[in-house]
Image (cartoon, rainbow, N blue to C red; front, side, top):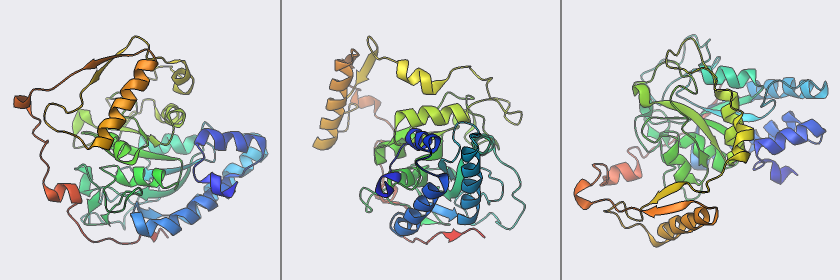
Length: 332
């Protein structure tokens, strides 16, 4: 089972905890081992904290042994993007301008909700400085790399979270997204990323990106994303834009959803960019799957004279602006 633990979805881990076949301590020990084995190649973490992780896992194990699990994610490892305030850990946002030696005694809404739901925190993932771009490199942590091909970027700005999930260093990770910072890494890494409705998941401190900035899950399965959203969503008095709980149980609703009759726009080129043959084939295969499920695919071609101003990226944007890297240090 050991080889399978790294890539088990959270839903499966919880089922094995419930049956007594697996322990949260066993899982986090395996996750920490993978982090220490593969982190030097992908640089996905700005810090990791085995002491805290093991303490949280042992507390979870004790609750499961008593038959009293805490919340939706008891014992499930979760990686947190380093744009989120997390009690006990610094929030450095990929920058050397923030002093780590200060009081870090507050959880942002999402870490607080995940903690209340029994999640096991083991580290914080990399972000470009202040989360401002679609690749993940920073003066603080260097370049984060894509586990599929370390010469490529995992995207950004939640590239560290996406790379960790892809590499089997935890089943769940938190990302933030204004202009694509969850969706880009999810696409580049081939995992599930979801940008929830604005306000559905409370955020604090306020983002410099205003009302386009959201917090959401990065996972390997849709079921896990729905489960994680259930744990993360809800209002918080510190976020005036946060919405009341909608009462939807997404982990159940996702199984009842259907695309039959829904219209899906399909553009193979966006009107200006011919993709690589493998990419085009994958998009067309996806469209075929939706069609088989009953969706109506509508082909769309964007006019060339309405070219997106971000369509031409500089070589530096494609490759990352920093060429250095460093190994994360245990936090203690």
